Amino acid sequence: MNARVLGVSRRVTQFLRWWATELAACAAELMGLIAPRWRAPVVVYIDSGRLLIRTEGAANTLAEVEVERDHFRSALPERLPDPLPSLLERGRRARLVIATGNAFVRQWRLPLAAVPHLKSAISLHLSKLLPMQRAQLLTDFEIAAADPAKGVVDIEVAALKRLDVEPMLKSMQAWGLRVTSIRLADTPDSRERFRIASADLSGREWRVRRADRVLIGTAAALSLACAAVAATQSYRSQRTFEQAKGQTSILAASALSQRQSLLARLDPLIALSRVQSAPGAPELLADVTKLVPHDTWLTTFELKERRLRLVGLSPDPAAVVKLLASSALLNDVELRSTMSAGIGTGKDRFELTAETKESAP
Image (cartoon, rainbow, N blue to C red):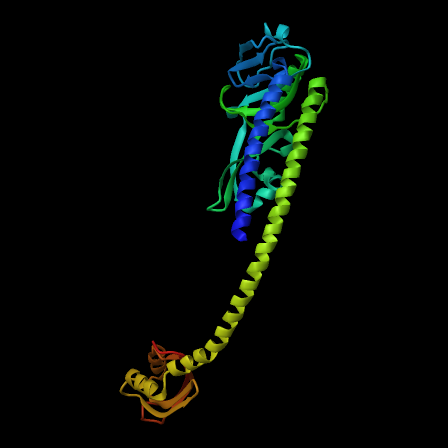
């Protein structure tokens, strides 16, 4: 039964992956048919040495204009350079891409368990990661790498100064462009990273046209189809999990019962082993006789359970305690009392106690 369920689940997963690939390809082709190429966004790349504007015209002609700049904070031109104004309609969407070297980018490592709550975790620590107050910066983050073996994920946080970006946005709006996003890239042709938000972006201004309605309807239909497939797969996975859990619970209960029975049988054996391994009176007497010096006499050797009591005469009872403390059979050697044995004897009467170890080495 389990093999059959696993086989069906594998086939369903393969089918869903194929279907998702086909849907993505169809969506890309549909976008190419119903969205005119002249509506592609304008890309404005800015670094410390140049301003590069790229756009595609109605006749699928690529226009690229480059303007030299003194430094990154130089003001942008008041008007679009020629021949761009003749190729653009007012309200054309634009994407501002800033060189990565002009932004603050820092990498941060977090536990992999924090990924479901990544936005909250970064918001709590963002003030410690940034070089300035958060209100003066535009920020975003993305996952750079993940290491499941070590259970960590690397996060990259990017920040731009508002004082640097806001004049650029105002100049681009004066050109008639609608800036919808701010990205970072190392070069004009490299991969764009991050998606930095700003209150000055006009991406929230909806100007729904006929092509937009078609795109929205298509996206909604695809979303409903994906949601239905995901719900079906989730229900089947949950049902399979419950069945496997029920079978595993029976086996686990049986194994736990056998373990408890074995432990109950082992308890008397463990207690007997401890009793047998404890040193007896002959071993203790031999060990004590070997350790005490020749000028020490023992008058009492008393062993009750694990407690040993010794009484004797010695010129240095403290030395006797020190020697017995090095015994491999005794613990907690303690001098209980000491007093002089008499004038001229040169010895003291002492009493000490000790605990025998449970097992001899």
